[in-house]
Length: 182
Image 1 (cartoon, rainbow, N blue to C red):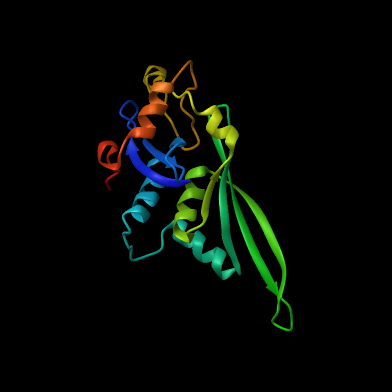
Image 2: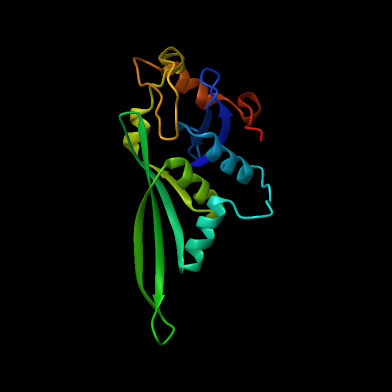
């Protein structure tokens, strides 16, 4: 999937990150925190900062440790919380400077942090089918009536038939949806 949009939930004023597959047939909205939205927005807008921010630091650390971000995966959504994993890989060189066996590491992460890192490293963003299936019926109005603060990892309420929202998210263009502005 790719980051399609970064916008603001009109009911909660929290940033929403919209992922879409290459065909535009599958859409996944993820409510994220303001700081993470800023990190993603700066990468979307290709804003060069004087000093490395947290996700730039993560990218630098991974690279200096001889690893690369192979992909990130949004693996699950349970009890209103999204889960993600960052998949790192490395090839250790032998004394003869030949590539050694590939070493892989999976690191637990919040989806917004994983996505911000994936964007900086040009890594693939994958989403488990069960996550897409569980978030098909999102009702934005239910979020407003819940009137509770939402933090990174919070999933919108999954209630009834939210097919109207899914249809709306899948058909909006960039101009119609708007962009997150810093």
